[in-house]
Length: 378
Image (cartoon, rainbow, N blue to C red):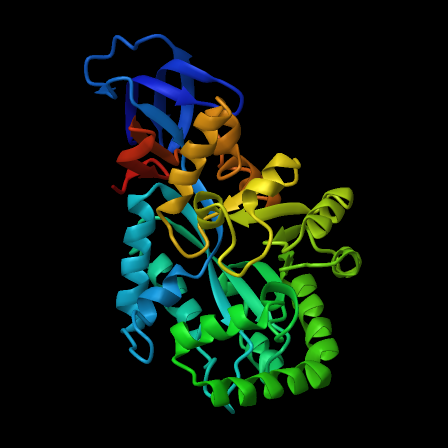
């Protein structure tokens, strides 16, 4: 039996901040009380904040550890461990590792990798190697060659909880601005102008040939594994109408206010990236997270490609609106509810003890300790 008390803390609940203490027993929160505990063995938090652990639904940070430089590969096992430790250090206690399925072998720009990563993550979880809780989020690219075969390799052991419909055909959605797409491919993949034109033609042909049957396969997979279905980069009202028709519950990074507002009309939860919020705009030239906030069209924040940005953006937003509980809910409670993880995401009795201890220094969060399922991991 593992039991301890976090004392003298500013506890960030869903709708208020309470100065008090939290008792954890057998990896769960069993009591939240105002005032100080008289237990002499309690941990004095020195009036630091205690918030729920963050729930990350879409991060391709693992890919960055696997390929730290263009055309440079790092051993997958090492990359997963580095990724896991990095997320733990910035207060992310549940992560949906976003792995692309749907490779493009002809040009060699998007090679198959997701199943191998999923197998290793499953093995690490079984052997209790990872510090935080990992789920699988399959980013299913409809504009690809081998999506059906890659999805067929998955089974119940991989803990796939989220699958998103993605289409990165040039000239639409995330990359409506072709120059931004070229800039991205040049930096990330080192592609020349001629290579890009060949790549674009191939992608457009793949979309025409495979899009419908790939979407059908995604919907079949979603039904078989009872996954949450997400859309990616919806741009027009028609994009959102189709998403709703497919049964989408989560809109990842809509590119326009029109798409975000239509998603809200359908009760599809809208998620945006915290780097976008911190930078004040999208790196792809699309709608800013700040504008969606101002129009009450943002439900969930994701770190996207910078894990540390999640808690930083939450604190920045919370201080600006003088409501830390509301801001933290967008990165803890809201993503938990959206993915049916009802055992976490808030500081309440009988919830998992996923917690962050931090202080605020010059409007920046300084993480001191992190607990995942009651175990201190940072």
